[in-house]
Length: 119
Image (cartoon, rainbow, N blue to C red; front, side):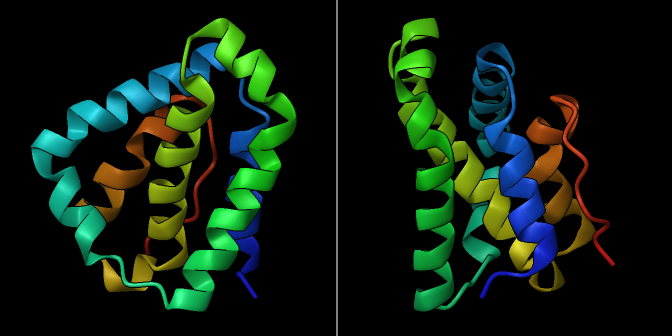
């Protein structure tokens, strides 16, 4: 079972406006070049944790698929991708350095999401 902070993070992400989700995805892509790719590789959820996390994100955003894709083509898939990467960071924050954690969750912090502290 996923921890409460991770579940709460996904709930908050699912409530973001389409423009905020698009901004978070675009920022995530930009940050991949600034250490985000390496930070993402440092998260190591178990297969069952990863499956549960992907399912939670998918089910949270699915009811909004038409709305998101209507705001920007492909936004539903983009939002799922960015949310899963950031949610893995929240789930496995103890495996990451502060800098790695920050680079992965920053796009959602900038969108107004409250993330748990790294410690």
